[in-house]
Length: 247
Image (cartoon, rainbow, N blue to C red; front, side, top):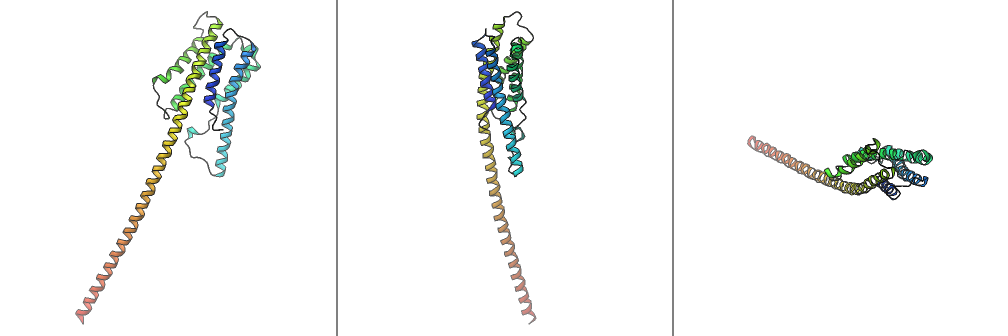
């Protein structure tokens, strides 16, 4: 299940939501609401399933004494966003008649939450790849779009136009997040290889140092033994000389 990348799946589903909103700006049928609900359920469910599988594997490894000593940040975290996406999707489908009237407010709120999540992701994964000012353009734009629609800053803009703007924002977010997810996966792969290489080099240096220390200990032991032998020989010669003098 580690092969399933839930952030990437979430980005793909977000892109699909945006495409649906762009293709059907005048559409208010329940079918579109159900499709959007499913596209929130799928990544949410995948995230929750992956979390519980990884958590069970970690508990099993701890019980068997074979737990991986990975950093805390790379261990499974409670899927708050996954549960939120899952519950939201179910709510959209079950209460689709009510969600039709408030769909633009709900989607705008989701845009703001996605923008915040993107900021957090960029900051948390900064050690895996180089992040510049341009990487924060997408979450800023998405956040602004969501805020403008929620606070009705756009004025008397018709609903199809608002739905089109939301679709463009979701599609923009999805495309950029797919790029981010791929870069992060590559960055993690390179980072893990680097850490493994450094660990291997450290172990090799330690092994060489241990070997050199063992050799040095042996040489010191041999030198001490020779020194003791020389002292014994000298003491024996002195004893013999004294004996000859007295005789």
